[in-house]
Length: 412
Image (cartoon, rainbow, N blue to C red; front, side, top):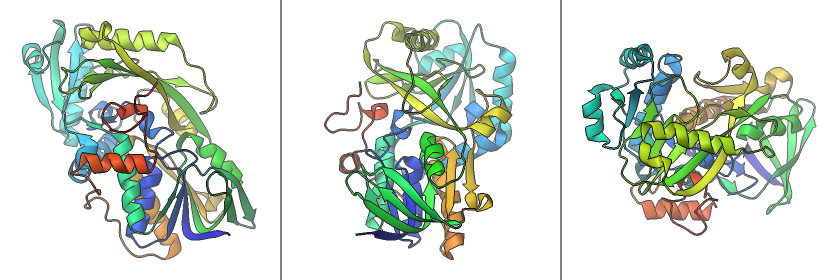
């Protein structure tokens, strides 16, 4: 029996779940489909940093301002999906002091709170920092647990009428004239879905989904490795004060830290090589900021694939520049009821969802505004309930496997 809905969202990562929640709260009938469990693509395979915007401040002040705004919002609405650790950008003896000054001044100009610390004050906060840390700046970075975040968004969407269909891959889209008239899905559902509007929120797989609708979305998947090691004494996130490169971030969890990351373009998000040099380089570089991790026991390793939008990557020149998000209205390509949301960061998922939901609401004649910036996520104050949501939607992943309780959550 054919399923009918106002909006079909393809992709159950943070952005897709955020879109489903946003639209459901506006009274729109929504179906979300995800080929695996929720957050199984990129969202739960990150290093889990909730950006203050400081990383991007010198090169992309607009993107940095967006980050600090969303970081503040998530601090208010996400509860135990977020751990408010703070962050330090540390300058080692080998680092360019002009870069540090430029980052500090850009943060001040944008309005990102920043506090200067000399080397001794930085070591008071993190005693295991090496002697060659000359100075640091404290910024409001935090840690985010994506399994909880995605599942809580999906739970709120479900509680307001959305249907969340996991293990339901899209197999085919039927296009007639200027519209997608039906979407064939397999897996647990094995049926056709008819929707007034289709949102492609498939992340690194957005190009493949768009091709089914006879439109072109050129993605550049990009892999990065993360290593969780046994170390429980780190308070703030550590960032290296230099141009972004391999092994420049250490993210604290409870009894572990996550070391990241690399940046290597790949041909396809489902089929890519992994390399031992990435593991060695990330550990060695992170150990320059936090020497004990050089010999710390490895708990798990994983690679994530960034959903980069290829035209933007070509225009910006690659790594080191903030990656914004792009809302592509395919009406310009002759398909009037499909849009794709691509690029972006986990930190800005809610803003991406709001922009997409605004477009869809306009197309459907819905006047209700976005309310997600002010409405707390369900279970925000109850970690156990958040973890139950994650189990319900099979939203596990290696990024937060040591924190989110439940079976088989230890990564690989």
